Image (tube, rainbow, N blue to C red; front, side):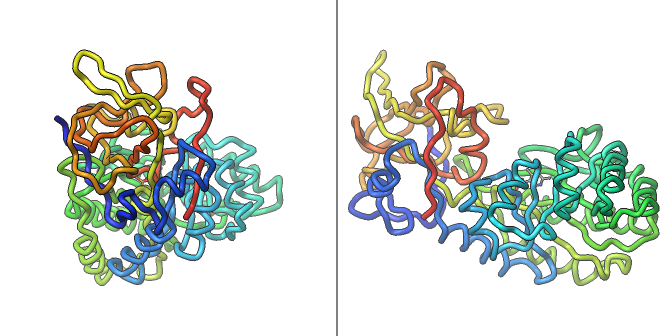
Length: 408
Ligand SMILES: *Cc1c(COP(=O)(O)O)cnc(C)c1O
């Protein structure tokens, strides 16, 4: 037997089934026209932002990192809740423009921004988080051609990283950002060339569950930003402090102590270096805002035994939920939180392997998991599917097509 990860709070049982926003899994599936289906809860998205606001000092803005879940209805739901939006492509910009997000609230990070992407962002008035001197030069040239000063912040590659983070994006040689020691000269250059100076972006990692590690990193970020601002010789209009807040995916993971993070940050904000006194501060969060608000539902198509092992074969799989299969940035495969949604109220009685429908042994959703007895027609739920699910999975692989998505 292998345990499954902790089911996030906020999910209920109704008529013996998993219920999301007051509707049973089977009613949601019927309403959406079938499985596989991602369901995102408005109530859980809103609650998460409200909890954050309560814990964080008022001075700290919250940005939504759109790549976690770029579904237009999710973005529209976040629009009145968050301060800003961080995008990583012109495709994401187009989604935000369709939703009607004010470009002044958008910043664009990511290595390898093409000229056409820079042009779209500059024309719209989006802030570019510049990843290199070359990108800054191209942005200035495009701004010149458009007759529009580009709004430029510089993404810093700091010498420290977020300890215990699932994905390191700072420290040492990186394709992200400008090495810290090269930032002042580049900043002075873009300011001198007439860019609208927007400040710094310092992102150090993702998926950290330790409040202590996050607090320490935030201290380092503020210290570095202050040193760089002094050297640049201009104030920082804005400092994007990164994020890295993680969610529990696996057995034994404990939720981040948000109150502790907020208290440590309040302490730092109360004693900011003078050079940051007027600086607008924000965090950028993706999975922490959206991850636990989503569930992936798929249906059991076959139940079979092989050498004494029971397999529940579903119509879903890694083509929609790559991360749950263990093939997206994990070394050791562990079970995501999962359940039989149509028997949510029942006791687990048997050990099963829940797999997807793809012709590869990589396509596993839960290994050796204790579940209530399920049969063909039952619905399987995989939790923590609100971020890096639908758009972070190879949905064209094997030609089954994308999953449905529903916001309730
Ligand atoms: C991906 C990314 C994020 C969001 O990360 P989460 O772990 O989802 O919070 C934030 N900032 C940058 C620069 C990113 O690349």
